[in-house]
Length: 102
Image (cartoon, rainbow, N blue to C red; front, side):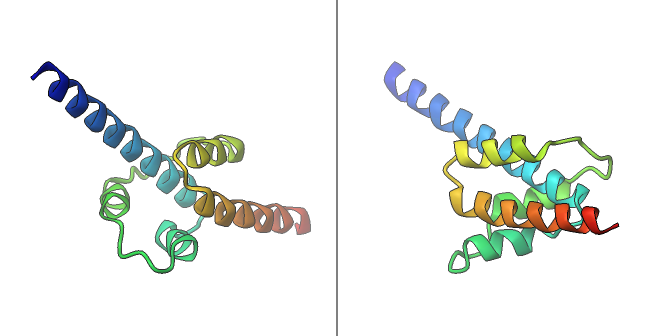
């Protein structure tokens, strides 16, 4: 019984951490005037709608969180979202070019 509780705890903790990662991704996207759903769809075109992402978007706070580009990339990669990290890095490059053109 104790073993099952530990497994349940580990699973629940991972799910909470994953939800936090998604929330940070959503906040980073919105603070950079990007659509997190569109970025996710580009990274994972064959996946159905991600319910955690939809919930995070609904719960997104309008106040900006200052999440650095490097931090969001590290967080995405830590959770194995390499495809999404690649799409995000492409958008970062576009944002840098736009800022450089001003």
